[in-house]
Length: 440
Ligand SMILES: Cc1ncc(COP(=O)(O)O)c(C=O)c1O
Image 1 (cartoon, rainbow, N blue to C red):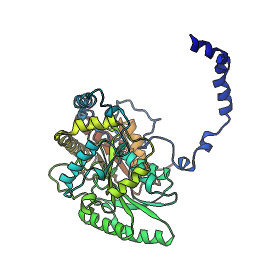
Image 2: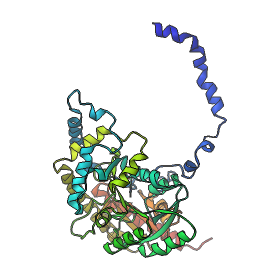
Image 3: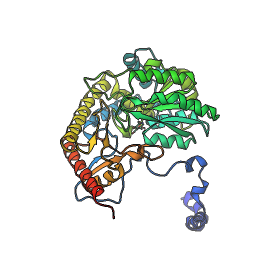
């Protein structure tokens, strides 16, 4: 009663307030108020795989657009049970619902440390890990700590466009090196570094997606890994290894040791994520580096860490080998999907494409032959009922050095993959036909 009476005198002002403010704010240019860093970044979603919205298809589209785990792999029940265990603590234990600190939940970091020690052949402990908001958040944190506006980052081209945005957001200059079927063309590095240094530039990172690359699906060879580590160390440049897909290797192929294993993290900052092995909606990833690097990263963490509740849920989900069992299951599913899309491409698309079936991960990079343009094939494919990314979106300057389409086969039901290849073939044929017509 009292509270209502106290409010009454200002009621009239309040009713006009928002309209008055709207009038005043309508005159302001919000974009001009944004920082130079924000203006450096194009608006839009973080992955930017070039989906055009103004083309429509008669058919229900098959979507090979984003690198997302398959719906049938999402462990809903196990996550719910894990959440139940995470929350089901003594009344006085409010840990899951209280700020968790900058490093992230210690037992989950410890679990990661045990898996890395087992899989990468040198002993690490929880202080070699910091939990983050996915691997995208991890890269943002690394940039916030080490990048001064104007610093140079050497990146593969093509690369994951989300990271390109992050580098731009930190006002780094992005300089690129080429890629081929063996990963980054590391022989380009030393002359490039020397030339940049002659121009007085400071190079902070060499950014690589060393395992099952996005968008190319390829893996950096052992020889190139060694060369990359040597060159980076010679010039005092960190290797930033985005290892989002490293756990999703297929059977029957030899996989080179991780960059962090070869270097024992000397000069290497590696980021990982639960996004691709479990679910992108979790938004939990990690940074793996030597403790003195982690210490610097923690200094620049201002958002009070990420969710202790989710960290505990993930710990409950992952413990006692359950994460390993889950990953083994999903690997087999993605291997089957990669085989199916590759078989479909061989069956239908042969005259128009060449490709390499990846040895892990979510992506198959299609090289369009005969001068077929990636953007045009992408647009025609949408009309034919297939959504896929055109290659140019993965190059920092948005110019595809070849003609490419990226097929993300992870999310699509197995029984649609052959049909997806058939639709791609129709799109290629129609674009080729158009190209062959005499120009008016
Ligand atoms: C190479 C690469 N790095 C990072 C990310 C971002 O993943 P996260 O969900 O862990 O932030 C993606 C997502 O597509 C990716 O492909």
